[in-house]
Length: 237
Image 1 (spheres, rainbow, N blue to C red):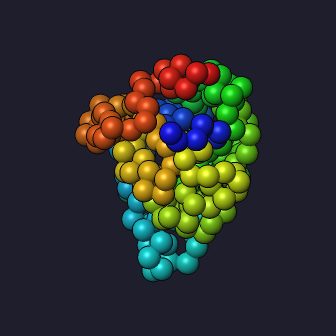
Image 2: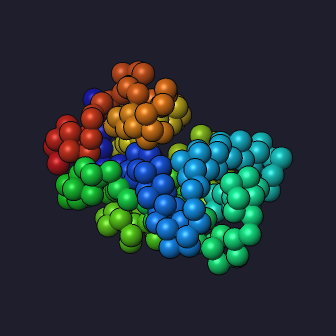
Image 3: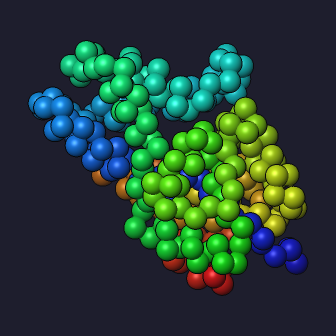
């Protein structure tokens, strides 16, 4: 019989917050304020996002020194702005746009579900985001974390083992006492390989109407839910 779960760690971008809709709304409002005309913000955002996985892999395999997600996104932003007629944006505007990742809105079920789970469990992000990003996001979105755990603490990115094992160590718990919650099957596979319990929460519109991956649970995770309300109910919260 496995020990009872004492803590839940959450993938954050896509699982807790709706990054794509949030940034699109944010950038469109910015464009209106600046009277920038007809910019294809969706295309810019989708191209911007392509830097995420390759850059983290470059850090993990030693081709890049430790580089935060904020730094990764800023490098890519500067590269693509001229492609969309935005090469003349000033430094303040570039900083503002890059920090859109700090201003993400939660999925409609996220905050209420987290508050239910917090009454029974320790809850924390376990994200590839930076500490300051996750703190700012929590303030902006009302995410009631007990603590912040993220890749920056370990100078490695998920799915590197150091991130999962480091989070377990920070919590002072056994692996089976910690449940990883994610909308991404790969994240749960790696968490389970280190002894963690797993919960899949479906976010089939994270990448918009063209999403092809993570539309459903691909394995028999400990919990499979459609939202955080279902997750809380399954865990007795």
